[in-house]
Length: 475
Image (cartoon, rainbow, N blue to C red):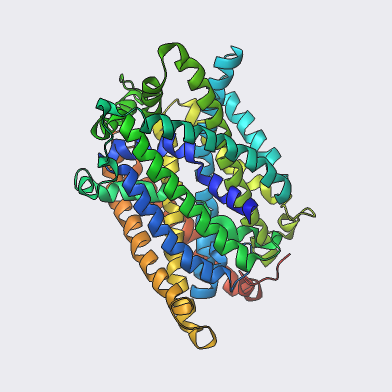
């Protein structure tokens, strides 16, 4: 189980989120209590994980979300979710590759004095992800242990240093004070926070490779969400102590201005500047950049592995060509691993070629929002599934009834976040991404609609294949 926890947690590596996602949330929402928002978002996903775990204990299939939706809402919606999830994870991968390429260029330049063009770094990043994608789960878990260790050391140093070096000499708890949720846009902050947690729900994609998936997947998912929520809550608070809670918002908004030509500085760099003397800043920044590169590599590899297993599962179900279902002895897909890089690589290359940080921001939010939609449909599917099979299952709050209540709560939260984000985010991103107003609904709706149309065609031409969706025997 520890290996699966490492893999699912690294899909949103703590240092990556502290470096990029949390400052972005500060920037656009203006909420002083942003760390508390991340805690609330993590708690909401823990409730979702209860319903998700209930499905994982009853349904063993490496398709993950789409298999769960198929059992609850039928194969037509299930194939729509499969298409939406695969494309959303691939888009998320492109955002992670942009971050990885950027920090790789920075690290090579500072440590070796080599001016490595960012587009070349994208190619290197894609190759590294493809290499990790060929490894078996057991070997991959050992590598993730080293990657996670770098994240833990960096975060612990930041937390301890920040909490013991308070701005103004006094520790403030405003960043975790619910009263500060009333300033700025809490709903927008929740949208950005929730979309950044995506990844822990990929545990079911490894069901074929686990000895006891019905026990391991639910526990690993809960632990992964809980760990990320606690780390972001505590670390976000510690950083706000070092900068001053209200100053954290202005610093983050300044860093955004810097990205589009202003004079701001990244939030974590501002913290480092307070924690160490001028003579040590460069060395510490180099070390943090190296840890950030390892975290971004882990995030990219985790997303890549998840997409590969979903593609292999669709091939095993008969939806895609059977050749894509081929696996190594350890369960790692062979040919399916090429799919996500073929989508994410060109997107990442485009983003860095035009030198526009808005592209990376938009694709990250777009991918996360697509997974939020998939979680909402999975929650609805869980409600239908447990109601339909209740007479054959255990009762009580720890049985199907508790799982159904958790699914209902998760449906409300994820549904609200998805709808609110579609309406509100375009107006927020209009300065950096004028096309967001039509891009989000067209891409997400188009991906889901394409899957539904695909299912309707199969229903007419090959109904026996559609009937196997999410129900084929484990490899």
